Length: 356
Length: 254
Picture 1 (cartoon, rainbow over the protein chains, first blue to last red):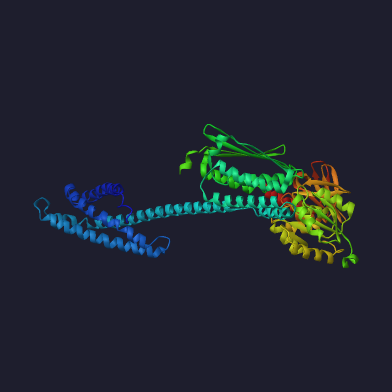
Picture 2 (picture 1 turned 120 degrees about the vertical axis):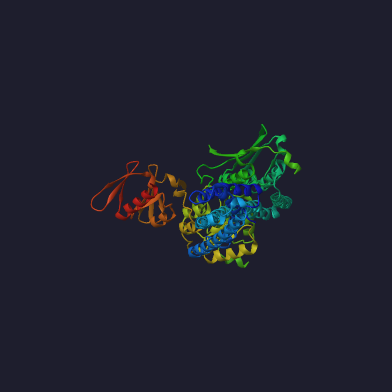
């Protein structure tokens, strides 16, 4: 569909643009020649009404000859020939109209008086058509760029979606193999414990897969995943892993993106506790205030070892996900002081979302 | 028993996880010729135990706090055969394959364990590949050494790369200068250079690598050569190519 015809107010604007053009044409025809103002107006107004439709047709030739894909020579040739033919037809129409009008008493001899101005009319028609071609090319370019932008936005959205999905489905292979190794060790010394660990691991995997499907989960669900995770790591690290938790009951119904905290806790163990020969502590804490919730994950770490460097990617992912969900409403603060690594997330407490 | 005439093999188990050590101990128990002389929960203990027991064979975990398996190998030298143990580390696994080191993946299966043990036995007395090369091959691309491990007797010192002022070649050793002290380490200066971030460390001379951050100024010194003056006043010779390298780095930074 023609872009200038579809919304009716846009077509109105287009018609309005023709008013000064018609005025100029009237002036051009009336002043230098023998035509009076009335004669000129009577001719030009219907002629312009017709010609504005003719100029709209440039849209189709512009679409047929897109500026990027056609040679300059061909472009010029197409549009100049079209302009000449259409303008010629228009002049013929003007003569016909003038002849018709001259039959009326008031406009007697109009056709003769117009004769000297036909070249002006032809020139004007020619230029007006080319002007229309140029404007249509501009419109096409604008449409193209907005389309491209929309496509770009769509693809980047898709990419982020895919990334998030991959992130959610990710189970650290290190964790998996080490857990299996622990189970394999326990089978001979403590079969009951081995079975318990198998179940913990199965539950953890099932929850990871299940939670990844959802858009948001209550904090309580994320916590029970974390408890499984930490229980498994506790078997592996034994006394080296100490855990603390201080999360008020009322915050547990708050909604958050699934598996948001999990990578942070995993970092705390993998880059904190695992690097300490004598182990350390992982602490989860939370509080809600003024319809916001803040959650903190802290762990002891070894300041001399590579400074939690590998965890950079995981932190970035968490930050990206927070931003994707809450925009500027969310914040994430990371600090590493006195052997204590701390990540604090703060975002709007969203309890209503359960109903969705 | 036919095993009687077989030579006794003393072994060391090094892993920071109790359960992982347990598996290895259990697997060795069916081999009466193997005597586990010590179990170590970290790299420091391992270095000490190696000096004390001089084992014939070491089962060595790769991922351990402070000192990794590679660090331990670097500190104990290459005389003792090592079977590395790792859960999952694509780079380490490739390094083992390339350098034909025995390695076991967790969870460790009986068959795989037996095979590795056979291989290690047939190689008793053979030298291991040098640790720095192995560790370099196991490092992910574009990752450079963040710290060095040096040993003086059984005392192990860790030097973060940022605290290294310069390194000086001394025959088969390099002397690492850090905070006014020099630490000797058995490594060539070329292999050290290869592990260092070229944007922070410059080989200014055949025998010297300098931490770029420490250089305060360069002074001309005789024909064709210069001296680099470090923040603590140390003067290091700078060759012509060394000077060119310093200049390119300086241009990159400004």
